[in-house]
Image (tube, rainbow, N blue to C red; front, side, top):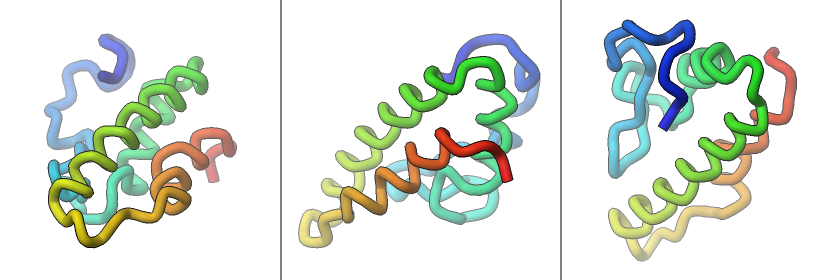
Length: 95
Protein backbone atom coordinates (compact mmCIF):
# COMPACT_ATOMS: atom_id res chain seq x y z
CA UNK A 1 0.00 0.00 0.00
CA UNK A 2 1.15 3.54 -0.57
CA UNK A 3 2.29 5.29 2.60
CA UNK A 4 -0.34 6.99 4.74
CA UNK A 5 -0.37 10.74 4.82
CA UNK A 6 1.36 12.99 2.36
CA UNK A 7 -0.01 15.21 -0.37
CA UNK A 8 -2.60 12.70 -1.61
CA UNK A 9 -4.31 12.18 1.74
CA UNK A 10 -7.90 13.28 1.46
CA UNK A 11 -8.15 12.77 -2.29
CA UNK A 12 -10.95 10.45 -3.26
CA UNK A 13 -9.38 7.15 -4.41
CA UNK A 14 -10.81 7.56 -7.91
CA UNK A 15 -8.61 10.63 -8.36
CA UNK A 16 -5.54 8.50 -7.81
CA UNK A 17 -5.74 6.51 -11.05
CA UNK A 18 -5.98 3.13 -9.32
CA UNK A 19 -5.83 -0.19 -11.18
CA UNK A 20 -8.95 -2.17 -11.98
CA UNK A 21 -8.17 -5.76 -11.12
CA UNK A 22 -7.76 -8.30 -12.61
CA UNK A 23 -7.16 -6.44 -15.90
CA UNK A 24 -4.73 -3.89 -14.46
CA UNK A 25 -6.19 -1.07 -16.49
CA UNK A 26 -6.64 2.36 -14.93
CA UNK A 27 -10.08 2.98 -13.43
CA UNK A 28 -10.00 6.57 -14.72
CA UNK A 29 -8.41 6.54 -18.18
CA UNK A 30 -8.45 2.80 -19.08
CA UNK A 31 -4.74 2.87 -19.96
CA UNK A 32 -2.47 0.10 -18.74
CA UNK A 33 -1.67 0.73 -15.09
CA UNK A 34 0.40 2.45 -13.88
CA UNK A 35 -0.81 5.01 -16.41
CA UNK A 36 0.72 8.47 -16.83
CA UNK A 37 -1.62 9.90 -14.17
CA UNK A 38 -0.77 7.16 -11.67
CA UNK A 39 2.94 7.60 -12.31
CA UNK A 40 2.71 11.33 -11.67
CA UNK A 41 0.71 10.85 -8.47
CA UNK A 42 3.00 8.07 -7.24
CA UNK A 43 6.07 10.25 -7.87
CA UNK A 44 4.49 12.99 -5.77
CA UNK A 45 3.48 10.56 -3.03
CA UNK A 46 6.91 8.90 -2.90
CA UNK A 47 8.87 12.08 -3.64
CA UNK A 48 11.46 11.48 -0.91
CA UNK A 49 11.47 7.67 -1.13
CA UNK A 50 12.30 6.40 -4.61
CA UNK A 51 13.36 3.03 -3.18
CA UNK A 52 9.99 2.73 -1.45
CA UNK A 53 8.28 3.51 -4.75
CA UNK A 54 10.27 0.76 -6.48
CA UNK A 55 9.45 -1.75 -3.73
CA UNK A 56 5.74 -0.85 -3.83
CA UNK A 57 5.60 -1.23 -7.60
CA UNK A 58 7.55 -4.49 -7.52
CA UNK A 59 4.83 -5.85 -5.23
CA UNK A 60 2.20 -4.57 -7.65
CA UNK A 61 4.08 -6.28 -10.50
CA UNK A 62 3.84 -9.56 -8.57
CA UNK A 63 0.10 -9.08 -8.01
CA UNK A 64 -0.52 -8.09 -11.64
CA UNK A 65 1.38 -11.09 -12.96
CA UNK A 66 -0.76 -13.45 -10.86
CA UNK A 67 -3.99 -11.73 -11.91
CA UNK A 68 -3.10 -11.62 -15.60
CA UNK A 69 -2.06 -15.28 -15.62
CA UNK A 70 -5.30 -16.27 -13.90
CA UNK A 71 -7.34 -14.10 -16.27
CA UNK A 72 -5.78 -15.65 -19.38
CA UNK A 73 -3.44 -18.61 -18.70
CA UNK A 74 -2.81 -19.12 -22.43
CA UNK A 75 -1.35 -15.63 -22.88
CA UNK A 76 1.58 -15.37 -20.50
CA UNK A 77 2.51 -11.71 -19.96
CA UNK A 78 5.98 -10.85 -21.22
CA UNK A 79 8.13 -10.48 -18.06
CA UNK A 80 10.31 -7.76 -19.62
CA UNK A 81 7.29 -5.66 -20.64
CA UNK A 82 5.73 -5.99 -17.20
CA UNK A 83 9.00 -5.11 -15.47
CA UNK A 84 9.39 -2.02 -17.68
CA UNK A 85 5.75 -1.06 -17.11
CA UNK A 86 5.85 -1.38 -13.33
CA UNK A 87 9.42 -0.82 -12.15
CA UNK A 88 11.93 0.56 -14.66
CA UNK A 89 10.35 4.01 -14.90
CA UNK A 90 10.82 4.54 -11.15
CA UNK A 91 14.58 4.82 -11.61
CA UNK A 92 14.27 7.60 -14.16
CA UNK A 93 13.76 11.25 -13.32
CA UNK A 94 10.26 12.55 -14.24
CA UNK A 95 9.88 13.58 -17.87
